[in-house]
Length: 330
Figure (spheres, rainbow, N blue to C red):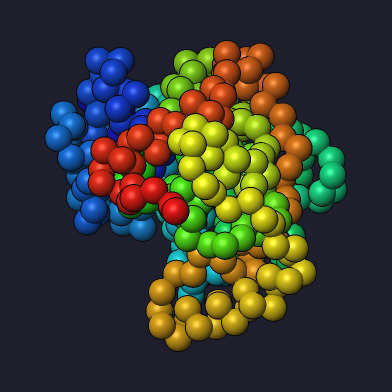
């Protein structure tokens, strides 16, 4: 078996599995319940999760490279400690399974959120400090701690490299992801106005390509930012409008006006046990990580993210093929 992948049924994982298969390699994936991301693909499956070391031992048995993609993304907090358990404890388990099975290579998927947002106007590259402060968001801190564990594992003899994607869009977004939902909401005009802010957007296919390049060219103990370009959410709406010749929301509500309602939404969602789309953390995230450099990944890995227009078009057309695009806005 050439490759083992955790998180294969998620958005990035589904794209990575397809990219690895396109190279003619054999793939074993760790699966739990939702198998849509890998349905119909020629892969070997192992039941389990990253909190179960035994299942990871089975996943990693006899493989050359492990891609650790699985993570718990949260915009509401630590979620009863599950964010830390999965993103830190789960990563420790993956590392242990790799070492015990003498896996040749580990590529760990961290996040731009693993890096501190301070100074907020400064350029972020791989030299930026990790988000390890107690006042950092729980998700950010968990990704920073997980990344730190991977980098420390190199001293134990593991040939490990980290990549840090930004806000991911792209096809094969079956669930869909938070970013995919945001794109669908803008297309369908589900909100009269957007929130002032934006993200550094990157294509899931480019993230997968970066990971495969890191497997071959990435240095042990190094991290690589897989970023794209920063766009205000109103600019994303404008691009959708131009591509599809349709009306999209253009007005941006000031952050200060959204702040108090976001706390109300968070409290209500906890009562109803649902995940809200907008929370205080999500709103603050829209103001952060604006200036990001992928120069290191470009220089050392040959990483070249595609234009955002191509990503938006391909993503929405994939959603159309899945029956997720409704009638045009009037």
